[in-house]
Length: 311
Ligand code: UDP
Ligand code: MG
View 1 (cartoon, rainbow, N blue to C red):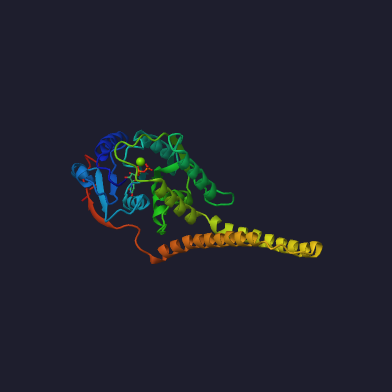
View 2 (view 1 turned 45 degrees about the vertical axis):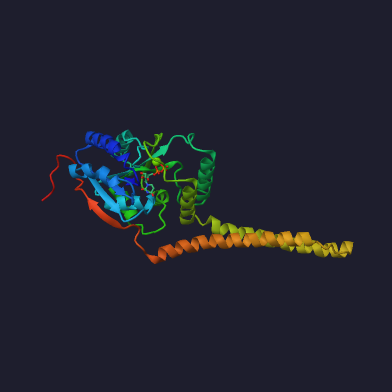
């Protein structure tokens, strides 16, 4: 469970969650990855850590949700791992349904939001555009629409995810990339219990850019196509001018055409260089080989209540 400034949410969430988990099994641990919170998240969690059943992993700073999820996946020890948000938007009852689907043979069970009616039209339009780009025909990895990070994974899926080394992490794409038998359960996310969402439209756009550059070469290829069309158009236009010269015999000054087309094509060139830069920047991130996250401290044995530590 990635948590960034969730001090107000964690106590009630942990009460609900541990009660729910205790109904399902006597062997569970809740792993909270504190993504560099600046509020009293550490104090809120302290009584839970002593009790057992809860582990607390603090990252050295705010790395972002995708990185916090990676830290959680790396440190989780269970046969089954469930990822969920720490703001009570992911109903704990769904975990039971996910576990049923897993027992019925699914390797990964993801909860997809049943409706986006509660979101602004800008966010919905952006989401639609994003999925249209990454899930275009011919792309090998299809990212399920509306399935977020709320999901259950079998140990095999977790190990597969752990073997992916990339720094530019777009988890939704990585879950799809590893494959395995995936089942989708519909749910409706609840309102955030307390606090504010960390994802503004801007940070979502940034995440989408990470997703597109990591899972699609369409933006790179697009410009070869645009360039080809423009070049063919230019040849056609040249032929037209020559014909015009011989048929009508007089040449039009045409400064306006010249200047506007010049501006247009330099714009197109700058844009394509920018797109190249976006990919190059990400290649730079990968070759630097920096760790994806850094752990500052770890607390709690994570053993469920009643269980005794192995000797
Ligand atoms: N989160 C995180 N690091 C961040 C931002 C968010 O670990 O930099 C966690 C946050 O605590 C929550 C989850 O990611 O558990 C989802 O965040 P949020 O509710 O802000 O996003 P939304 O639900 O609006 O997509
Ligand atoms: Mg939320």
